[in-house]
Length: 386
Image (tube, rainbow, N blue to C red; front, side):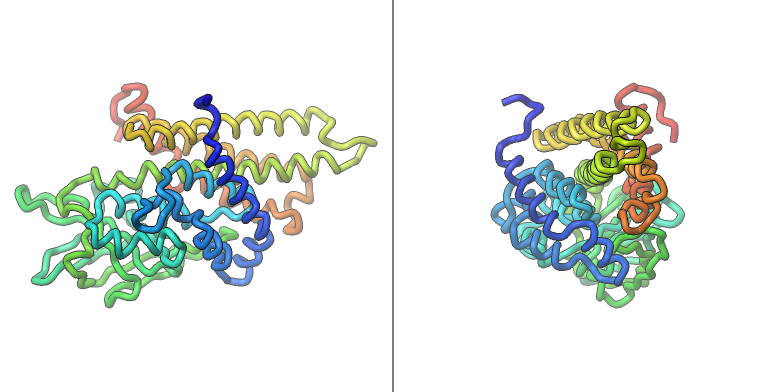
């Protein structure tokens, strides 16, 4: 089979997820955001059908697939107008880290809920004074008689109000050197000393952003996922899947916007023929289609490299895909609005609501500039700039 063609199983998965997405659609997503509801019905049904757990190992209730399968689910839901950010966070980042570094007991405790959609977990690394600089994190975990004491805080953390636990990137003192190294902890959101403050965002989404405060939270010893002094390796285990998933969501959003623009350009008649007959309308849409197809191929390449165990190759492709998808999503929504003219800014047409979130795709979960830093350093061999 050609390496540019997805497997029959994945193509069938896409069809099934697309049908589920069509059942809900952008109006469901926007209404939930407007009314302060969550996408609980969609999330639950996707879980029951096995779509959320496609990349979770079979022994823990998942489908046993790889990150490319989960990315396909994410993309198809975004094409339907339901870009579920928590898919990037919960099954992709947290699920991958626990599957790779968790103990057998931790896997049995936390993975089945991810697989069937009954459990949702958040991930927190970003801090107010650290941003993308993971070496400057100040959230620290200190050993106690029976576990750990966590102190610090995080910001711009997604979906905390929907999560039972947050996988927190903290720092512990290395037993040999005394230097602080990253370590990962599963922290219950109802733990004493845990508090969250919602950030007022200009995004139309049921999924919210929060600033977190950890005030001497006492954790049991088995809250630690992986080694306490494993350094950056275990931290970055979830970041390639994160970028692949973000690229898939951006690609899905771009395809959703392009589909709306094309449909409008075919039916809108101003000068005796559809506006799509004019090159000023047709060419930007054709260019978008090209950009999106290139992004899809790059994302699929990243997923294939990751599944094959080529983590460095996957890191390069995933960062490039993230940049390409962020550009495509922002450009697609903007072009679709322009195609609609004044109607593009009317809530009825469902595009203006996506303007901020499509712009966010160039900022989160990693900024375009940091992704370009990776490519400059590791792909081109240029000197490190930071």
